[in-house]
Image 1 (cartoon, rainbow, N blue to C red):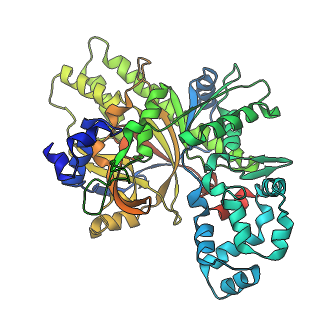
Image 2 (image 1 turned 90 degrees about the horizontal axis):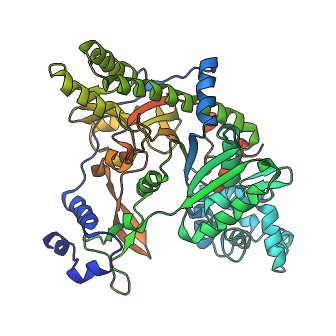
Image 3 (image 1 turned 180 degrees about the horizontal axis):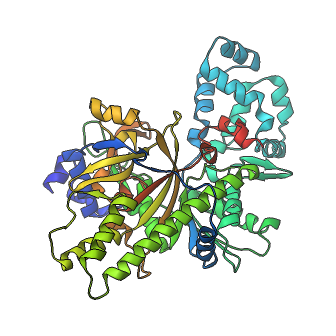
Length: 521
């Protein structure tokens, strides 16, 4: 209890906490000792970790892909629990600071160079271009409110509030996955629609089965399920056995909140406050799926039909590359477990690890016995595999591909800026000279060469969590973020990076992103 007491946690508190005592102790140890920054050795660049894929599929590639697809090996995992509050944050802040503002005043602000006003003006002037506009009119009409009257009045605040608050559509309180992003003929399509329709083109097996998984918030589960049932009834899904499963982030993965004095933060009832531990907590959801090959993508990175062809082409490329390397890895693991293994095979496997898998280590067992070498290469190869698409960095925020120093060499990792010690000039220089960033296009192999699922929790680096400043219920706090799902949660996976075109990356981080050409086909 000594460590607990240091953070103002007492025996009686442990009765009500939503996590295990051991897990809480681990969290407090990190707060107490601090978390060392990741040490970069270099950015992953062309010929230094980033590979260029072939533009065209060979007949052999296509056969490999079709075999896996038709066997029902491929499914998807899409984190969709985030609310859309950040998507509408700029609108919300502006109208809260300008209680009475009409369109003419807004234009004056914008003409004076006010960037926030320019942003809001773009939203207001293009309001009827958003896919959700007809639903806004319908929703307000049901309440006896004419949307055209609001537009004619030029009341900017009322228009924005009717979009984002519960007095209208309430989009700021909804999950991104169910907001209408795109228009197609008379249909209005959400990210859930778009993910399903894209997956339909490359994941459906020969029996017509299509399996997908979304992580959602408990309060939004019914909303997603209802939309799922609507999608199943669309003409596009005729003859398709669509199976979408949903899960929520486990309360047992929540992390403690500390006040700025590093004491446990408490609510009005005196209970210790916990908060979701970030998307790294979803490793447990992914592990529970017991899936084979899984495609991971962010819920807001969707494209209309006109761009899906390109997305699908590179998705198939990433899957095929994964299958090729998986096939080679499984082949070597089978050979190494046969009798009479010799050093010729061991040397061949070593060359494969270094030259093809890009595993750079300084502890290769050249002078050990055959038995010790077999054990070493089994451990090295028998682990989850991921192939990650990377796009050229043109100033977009997000993590990137780097080589990271380890005790036994270095490894390829996806690293967030918050994990890097930017006060170190060398580390800052490496980060600033990176050429690619992570759009979250991952294809993962989750079963071993015997067909058994890995326990993914064994292949994370728990010490790559990070501490950040947050706020909750108006209180500033320190929060512990678990190792990110594609960061430290996959730190001990075998990893390959392939460049994919920037055009495959069309995220919607802010509402005005929906006005970009890539979303307005």
